Amino acid sequence: MTRNVYQMIIEYQEKGQSITELEVRNIMFQTIQALAYMHRHGYFHRDLKPENLLEMNGIVKIADFGLVR
Image 1 (cartoon, rainbow, N blue to C red):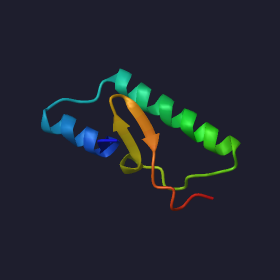
Image 2: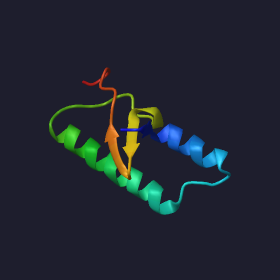
Image 3: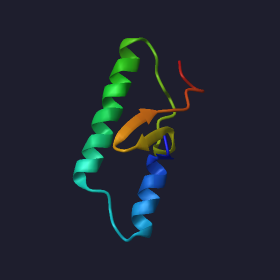
C-alpha cells in the first residue's frame, strides 16, 4: 500500500481539490465491510482513524491492529 487516507486527503488539499463524493463512498463502503468481517469473527479495532486506513488504486485496507480486542 502506497499511502494512507490521511496522506490522500493532504495530497488533494495541496492540489487545491477535494475528495469526490464517489471516493468517500468507496472508502467508507470498504471500511464498513472490513469492520463487519472483523466483528463477525469477534475482533474490534479500537483505533480506527484515517492514518490506519491504507489506500492504493482505490483499494482500502485496515492497518495497525495493536489495540485489537
